[in-house]
Length: 328
Image (cartoon, rainbow, N blue to C red; front, side, top):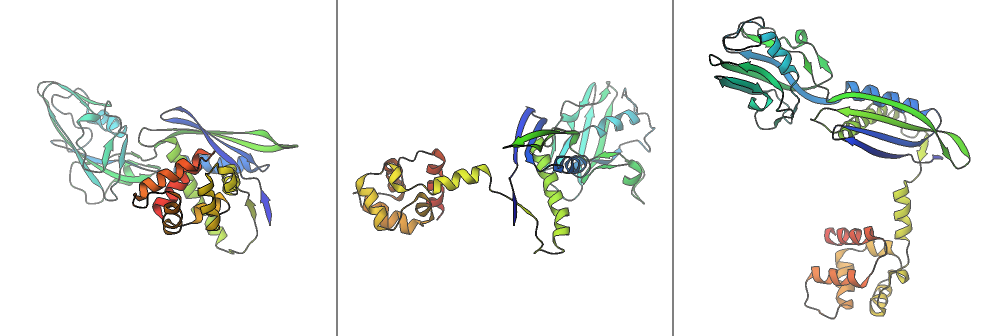
């Protein structure tokens, strides 16, 4: 079995909608392989939501002039295309804009159903005067990539239904570069830097995670040809290696009282890993009650007293003990 060093992925947050992701060290050549695949997937295949068609009261087509509205309908359609939306609904959703009198229509005026969110409420859609009385119905759907108005046109749709170009992708821009990095004596490993900028509807972290999931599903098709085929396995992560060292820590190093130490030894517990492997019944009932003189105290109090007596050096182990015991 060939084992390669497991790369580490880190994130440098530039702002809410932009992050740089650094993956290193990668075997020589894999920086471009992975970077190009991630970039193409991020730009083309991240699910999102967009307006697919609108219907305006009193308008038969997109070249209609609306009374009391400064913009013509074509400009309004262009503005509506810029709405940044997210939807949890698998079926098409319907939203409405209803406004009359002098003022402006913005993204905040779009009344959306449950599960749909407008992420740019400050978007300017139209300017109205005192004679205006506007009612617009918007159809919102989930999809991916870019779909033209021609593709969104439904055969047999009612008169006045205007199809809209749909930009589903929540990703605005993706760039990547590959640098050389050093691993021990070798200097030919790759360091991949992926710069991702998204709309407000999705964070760069979630976009990259979505792209990774898609690629895993697609590359899994090749793996299905022969599950027994040998490949390069990735070694343990730095966090896993550190945790393994903590789990191997002898209980002698936990600064326990003599009474606590003897109780654990009698139960055959010699390391932190063996301690975490014990269930609530094994550990709390059989050990903690023996450790603590108060036989009638609560489970939470027993756990609290045990953790006070066991002064773990790594703080994460305290949390690990709590989670394990309370879920057992």
